[in-house]
Length: 411
Image (cartoon, rainbow, N blue to C red; front, side, top):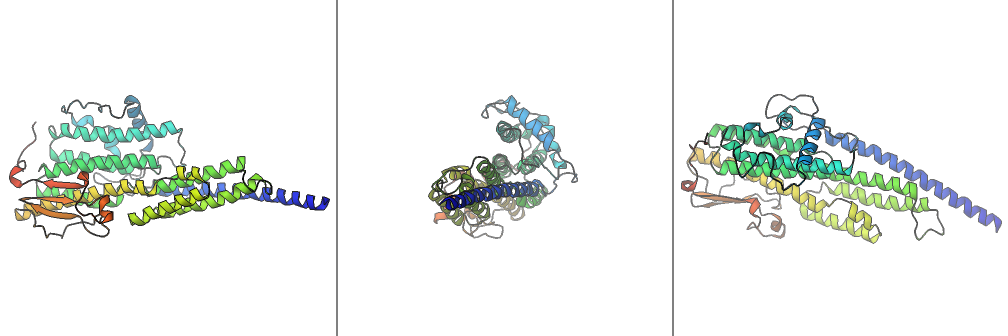
């Protein structure tokens, strides 16, 4: 009896030690992997639109300005500085730390994934959003003071800034996607209103947009980083505190914690792999399956902690759809300039793939002497091709109803 008890104690001690050792190694391995992921996503390879690439890092300068902007305007709905009922704004409205973003070829905001606090990250997120609101609102003022060419350059600068602002942190990436979406909307209005009417300016814009699409802000890297950071936190927490459960009477808490962490880590890694599933329907099924497995395992905290694969990808796909609509609108204006009219409804030469169209292209039809162009949006995943999302649709009126191509901005 004594020997049996002694043997059981030795087994329990050995299991506890092995569990602690496993968690220690897992935590260290995950920390290394997280740093590698952050280093990989911190290197921006977006193309230069203005000037020459410089090996400089403006991340700290951006961060100071963003936090200052968010601090000055604690309510995000508050009108941006200098914007009062559409009043004219000088070209100096663009903060210098945004203007010089065209010099930044590598932006490494937080190389170790460390932020001073959650509040600081929130200030950065809000600051990025405010920059978008500020710059796009100032577009109206800039339109009446500097003309279409400089206005387009300013918006393209802001589109590049949104890519630069998309760090590996998911919250900041989503804020950057919002900025990019606002810019895409402003550029679309600029073109459809006939404000950018010359063939040379439209051709240059088409070239710039074509080189930017692969570098639009995406959520994939941010989701992988958040999932890895969650795994690191779980490993550290379970190593320090252990975990009680149904095996408590037989195994020490560190052994139970190691077993459960290994199970939950596999679900976290499934989430990281599912990020790259291209089909939204398949992605949604994978996300639901992972969350169901987590609930079945009793890991409700994991369900709450993991980023939403489907919802976040929808935000990204929405941006991609609007961007491709913008590129197609530019192509259609070039066709109109060359042929004197928009192509008929059978036109498909310049239609791009619809991210929501399950392999099909954007939809296009003539309306009078104008046209209608749209993405099917989320309903398209269920076969509805009419287009239900007004933000994914462009209707250009008859040519006689449009502003004159020769109209000059009011000085």
